[in-house]
Length: 130
Image 1 (tube, rainbow, N blue to C red):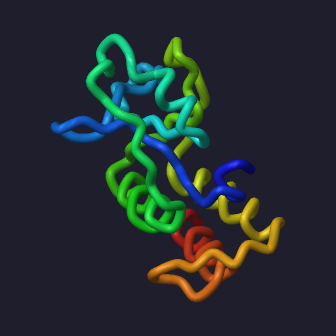
Image 2 (spheres, rainbow, N blue to C red):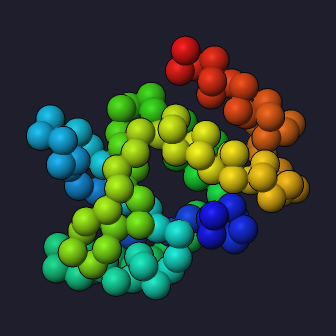
C-alpha cells in the first residue's frame, strides 16, 4: 500500500551493483530484496551489506523493468526484509499483480512507459502466467 501511494521502491546498491541473496526455499534461487521505505532499506545496510546505500527506484521502472526482468530470470523479490533479513519472498508476476491491484484500488494516475493503463498491464501479466 505504501509503495502504491509513494510510487517508490527502495533497494540497496553499492559500486558493484544491487544487494542480492539466495532464497530460503532450499533451491538456491536468487533473490533481490526491496523495501517500501528508505528507513527499512537502511536498517539492512549492515554486515555483508554495510557498504550499500538505500537507493530509490521509481515504481513504473520497478514494475516494467525490474520485475519483468526478474520474472524472465526466475529471480524472486524479497519484500520489506527486517534487519535480521527475515521477510516475505514473492515471485515477480505475483508482486506485479499485487502492486497493480493496489494502484487500481486507489485510482492512481501512474504513467507507464510500455502500457497505456493499469488494466492493460494486469491483462498482459495474467496472459503470461496462464
